[in-house]
Length: 191
Image (cartoon, rainbow, N blue to C red; front, side, top):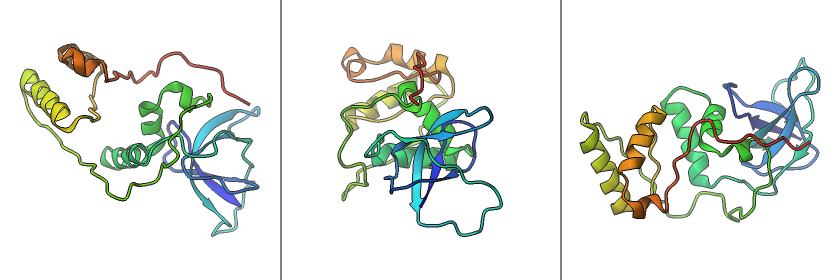
C-alpha cells in the first residue's frame, strides 16, 4: 500500500511512500527525506493500493504516523488546495504558511475535530475586495467579518496585516488570530 504525501515547503507535487496500513487523508506522517537519514513531517493526500507505473527508483516507507484523523478541517484543507491553484504555488507551501509551526513540525495536536470531511451543507464563500484606499478596504473587511461572523483574510505583507490588526475593534481581536508567516518558535521534530 502507498500514500501520496504533501510536504510543507517547496515541493510542487506529492511524494509517494510505502505504508503497511491505510492512513486517512489529512493525517500527518514522518517520512525519510534527503541524505543522512533526514526526516520531514508531511500531510497524507491520498492512500492507494498500488502504483500505476513501475517505479525505477526505491520507494521508501514512512517512518511514523502521527495522527489517527486529519488535523485540518475540510475547509482548511480545501482552502490550501484553492490558494495553491489560485496563486500558482505548491499546496505544501500554503500548508507551511497557514499552519502553526507546531503542526508542521509534528508536535502532538489535541482537540482534533472528529469530522474533517466536507460538511453536507457548506456555506463557504470567497470574496476578493479590491479597494485602493487602505481605510476603505479595512472597513469592508471589518464589515464582512461582522456580518459573516468569521473568516480568513490574507495579506501580501506582514506590515499590512499588522496595520489592519491595529484597526480591528477589540471585540473582534479577542476572537481573532494574527498569524505571522514565520510561525513562531520552532519545536523539535518527533522521531
